[in-house]
Image 1 (cartoon, helix red, strand yellow):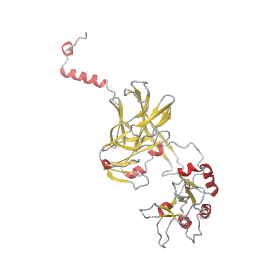
Image 2 (cartoon, one colour; image 1 turned 120 degrees about the vertical axis):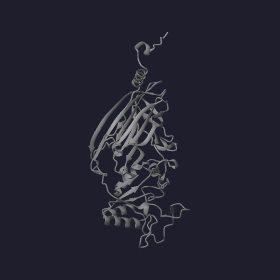
Image 3 (spheres, one colour; image 1 turned 90 degrees about the vertical axis):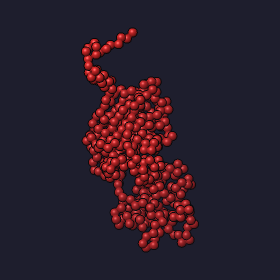
Image 4 (cartoon, one colour; image 1 turned 180 degrees about the vertical axis):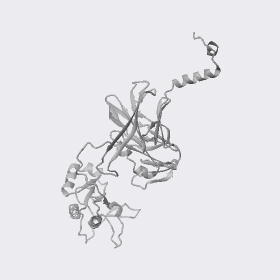
Length: 417
């Protein structure tokens, strides 16, 4: 039978000393961790276990950006009994590399990284490493799974509980971008999702290094909270394996997000070392000119006359390329549209009640049929390369290698896939 001991009577301790002793005992049982800080301290990431589940929170220059939010993975064979922390390893990294092309001639990859090692408390006691990087311009998180064989990831539990109901903007496919709109009123489902969190604090959520892990969309879980939903796409990954990065870019202004190099640093470099074939440059884009009228009354369409005018303009002003976008070889979603042949006479139709692209009988005086090899030759004579659009419909219904070989034979400068 356990005997109760009166510390005050036995050792002559005062009430205040007893409280101090109890506080010391209490704190000694709790592991306190300093937040992960970026090299200059602009970004801070707090990692914590709450009810044996992992969470993160992000601040930027003293402004709360992401409140405490769940992180982790939901497997087909789910983790059992929560997690316990095994260890934390934090290191500072600093290197510089030179891109082939981009906004900067050299890029610094400077960050502090924590590998938060967790272990399943019950069941198979599997390991899950939460890898977090803090850059002065953002934060990123991904997961490493151990073992052998294959694992099915049902859902990504990485969440973003934004600190306030700020104005936001997002991509919207081929439709006009969404925003500005309050975060609570946002009804889109595409990254990047950019939010003004404070007067001088902007955050943009997106992802990097997408290979085996399915791409994500923002799924609302509360008025100002979202998760990186895989939208029902299960990822089958061979163990050991690492997931994609979930990223939050940070800056004082929207422009800071554009000059931010966090994304290019998180995406791994190419395995190829020969980039002599890459010829960067500006390009004209025929898509945005369809139906437009010049001052001389000329109407732009998908035809040789329009493309030659664009080539002439590009040549005059030193623009290196012209992209022939969708429909140059036929209706883009028609499996009968052969990407290696010329097409019927197609015109742009601005009437909103009708399809944008419509077949029309060729005019009786149409003596200028689409001839891509001839157009490429015309462009080369004027130092303008032609880039050809092609999509999955054509790739799946026609020999893709033969198509590429054909474009190469024609002398195309590249493809827009």
